[in-house]
Image (cartoon, rainbow, N blue to C red; front, side, top):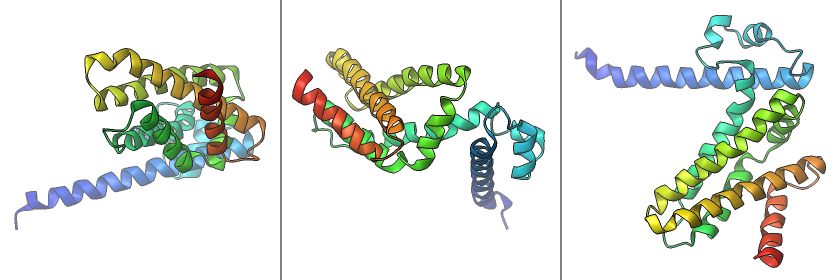
Length: 200
């Protein structure tokens, strides 16, 4: 038997195991942050509860702060995927709006609201949260330019990315202020409606 023929299967198994461990660590950390508070939860405690060695933790995350942003990273990738699926003939602004709506319908969960509360719990995390909006804007712009690469589109796509993340940011603020009384997508839709009815 050619052993090399087994390597794709083995590689697939290893990747699944890695993803499962990554998810277990992230979920364990989030649960402990909610139960104990972010500052009070140590990296050692997370590793022990997740059933891994401390050194193994750093194969997956470079800090306990990084656990908080793993969910946001998935949501960001979800936005890029949703945008890529939009019809190319769709106006870029409408495609962005639809992609954002698809993303929040998938990721606008109670877990996301809990995460937002945790990210507001310390000054350092609040600062990093603000810087993440800039990263999200650049990520959205990159996805927009990949879909509509013509040079004449650059300024328009920059504005669309800024508007999209701005509306998302305000929607998330309203969602948190209302303690999740309405779903995030309701706040997002209200933001876009206000923009179109009164500002454009």
